[in-house]
Amino acid sequence: MKAMILAAGRGERMRPLTDHCPKPMLFAGGKPLIVWHIERLVRAGFRELVINHAYLGHMLVERLGNGEEWGVHIDYSQEAEALETAGGIAKALPLLGDAPFLVVNGDVYCEFDFATFSARALARITQGKQAHIALVGNPPHHPAGDFVLDASGQVRSEGGSTLTFSGIGVYRPTLFAGVERGSKARLAPLLRGAIQTGQLSGEHFRGRWEDVGTPERLAELDTELRQFF
Figure 1 (cartoon, rainbow, N blue to C red):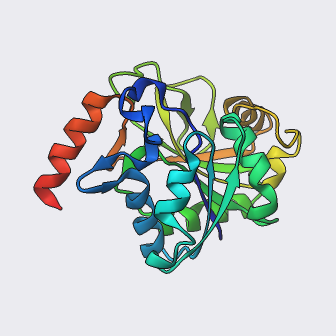
Figure 2 (cartoon, rainbow, N blue to C red):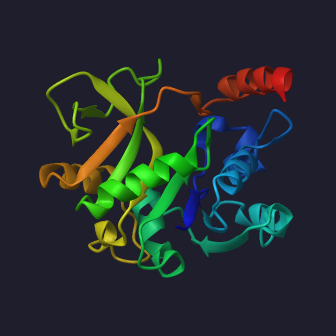
């Protein structure tokens, strides 16, 4: 299975830190956020990565190169301007191939077991799902949450306590068939469409996950990680 790291966002809430650095390249615990992902993906057995980029994307390419430093191969999907999540994935489909693939947001920090998650996700997708996503408890800055997860692992729009989409999921390429390549498109409408047809499953991740969305949260994460790594 291939993995894609989403790294094309402008990071407006992180300014002025992102005025001269793409958000996934910001440091926490002595290394860029995106490198934490790469290292965990490598430990999970992934060897082919796709990274999209737009704003200051050359800095990502210059730092990460072809992935040889970590024993992986990295392909890049360049966007003239950020195409949102679904638009970025749709543009990268020629690099991702015809099989289900993993996607993770490049601007989060998570202590996540990508290997077991992708295995469980693939089992659900083999049973007919279009996607399998990881949900987390609602953080203080997003108390309303996004979706409901029932006891069978089916994701629903309502009918129970909400959880927040983590930005991590495994998807069939066909989920993005209706997105025109090069156009902007959000992921949420596609996920809600899959909910309506009963084709979206998920699981509740209770481990460490941080949406590093402000300079203050980045500083807190950096301080904490430096105590342990």
